[in-house]
Length: 121
Image 1 (cartoon, rainbow, N blue to C red):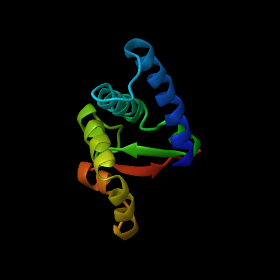
Image 2 (cartoon, rainbow, N blue to C red):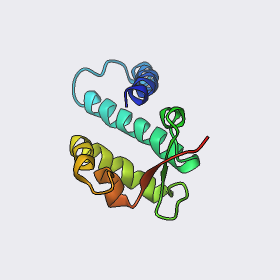
Image 3 (cartoon, rainbow, N blue to C red):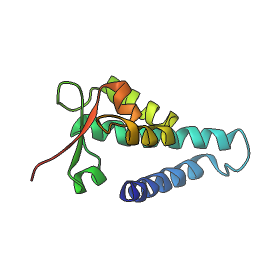
Image 4 (tube, rainbow, N blue to C red):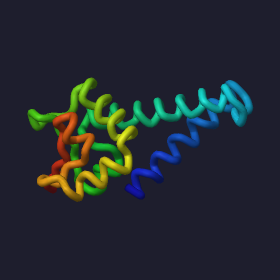
């Protein structure tokens, strides 16, 4: 998760720079709220695209982890979007859930039918 966070910080920093160049200071509402929504969408686009394309983000490739749908293939657009929304809504609870889940699945994976699998070398 730390490696994923570092990559995401770099992506969101670049997206923030673009937003600030286009719209100026965003410290006060409503621009502040627009910036937050914009960054949530940018992060979502990154995750959804990676999960649909190969089932892996850059960090997941490093750790040889892949997310797959119920059929064992990469997620569809609908599945990937649902997984992202649920993962952000249930952030902490989703990870705590995995400690008690009989298969060790995160809450967002359980609800979307997706699962994490190890990729062989």
